Image (tube, rainbow, N blue to C red; front, top):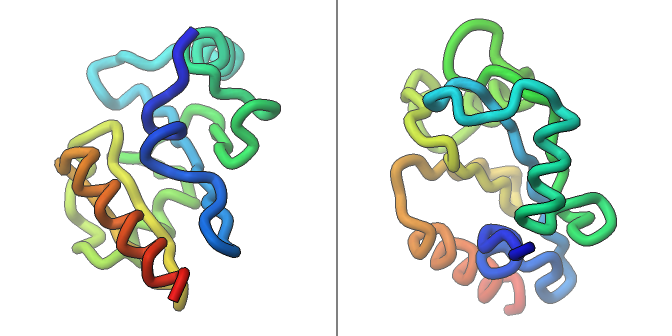
Amino acid sequence: RRKSPLISTHLPTHTHKHTRQVIGFPSQEFKGQEFSKDEDIAKFLDERLGINRKDTPNLIVLSRSKIRRGKLNPIWKWLKDHSDKDPDMKTRWNFSTIFIVKGNRVNRFDDVKFDEIEAFVSERTRIAKM
């Protein structure tokens, strides 16, 4: 099994005195690619990507929910409503990323490459070490 590049490369669990917590929002709204049962999602993440509570305690994967239309996951909705982007902006990518940084500022990334997200995390880590 291979480790998820999102966890191992792009989001360090600890930097300086700060902990990074990642929340996954599985959703069936992206071409039906998600499993229908939460147990199957957990099994896939563990067996294929090495994501589980023991090995990746900084990653919480929630139950499958909606993040694009209809009754949205309430955590996702709050994050979207409080982000630096228009809350009505469509979530077009199943790897949309939202960061809450010091001062409760919520930064949202949609339709970007991982290196842009990594640059943001690196910059925030550099600032935190000052």
